[in-house]
Length: 112
Length: 114
Image 1 (cartoon, rainbow over the protein chains, first blue to last red):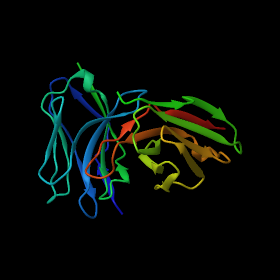
Image 2 (cartoon, chains in turn blue, red):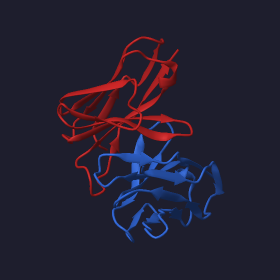
Image 3 (tube, rainbow over the protein chains, first blue to last red):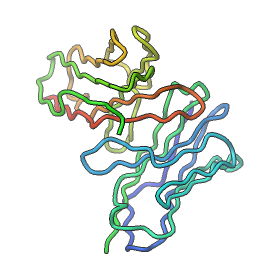
């Protein structure tokens, strides 16, 4: 069945460092891919998404490119801030859109 | 922010008791979902609804039932709670399915089963 695998954390970075969080997926058909962010005590919020191969999603300085050839959707940011500290989830929706599959989450802490 | 509320926000109950969690939306979105979040597992889909009285099972539906009698409300029931159902439960909504439509999440309900 469909699934998402993302790098395990926790990840600790200094402010202004470069961030990469790896995400790979297994899916039949043509899934859509998402990155969600969860701040402490809150629900998940959409960070960015891509609906077809080679699409790049971007938001708040974060980017991810839908790579069908490597079945990947890695999250990147060129210069992280303390306010980016959160848990990041990679997710896919299957071809029907009815089922969502989430990765296990990667905790990011950015220190000043 | 999407208008999604969950109640209660916190609940402690005992093994064997029934529990109902409520999700309420003000967005008139067709699709509603219940997830549980557990360390090491991320979020896992329990049940979802694609319209009033239309529901289907997700990945981890055993021990849970749902009902949707109105567009705005989606109820999750644990008929006889077990300690393995201690978790944080999130409701989500989306306008459409397919084509990468976004899910919007509620604030969560923390359930502890003793």
